[in-house]
Length: 162
Picture 1 (spheres, helix red, strand yellow):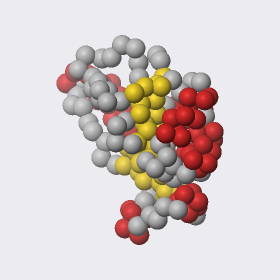
Picture 2 (cartoon, helix red, strand yellow):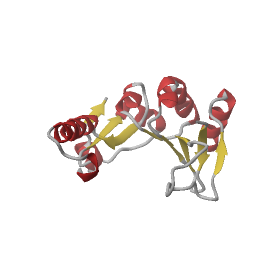
Picture 3 (cartoon, rainbow, N blue to C red):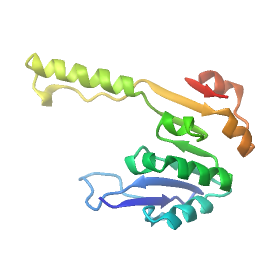
Picture 4 (cartoon, rainbow, N blue to C red):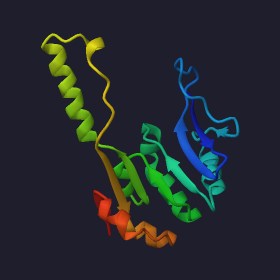
């Protein structure tokens, strides 16, 4: 699987993983997007630098998790507001994360296993969409970036790091 970062036309840099072979019916990247390979260090630097004046969205991926400290340092140095695919990024200094609850996924998976062990056919079990999402915000990072988080958002946050 080749790892790429997508520079989206609206000025948001989205670091994401794109495989060589797409599943049938999978969404294709927008034609206006350009792709860079974030495995090479300078390329990630360039992608984050290009987001200056915009924002950065980092999807949940093991490669980005492994390099989270470096990515966060680059976003802070470039003063790029960022949203990450995990609470661990916010604890390490990222601005915010918003994602479906891991606890919800584990409970749902356990429910599926229980149904299958009780005799249900996997094809007959309906697909479920997440119903619980978690928002984490790092106010220290927001201050460093000069970003004001409205009280209405802070009240909805599951975790606020001060």
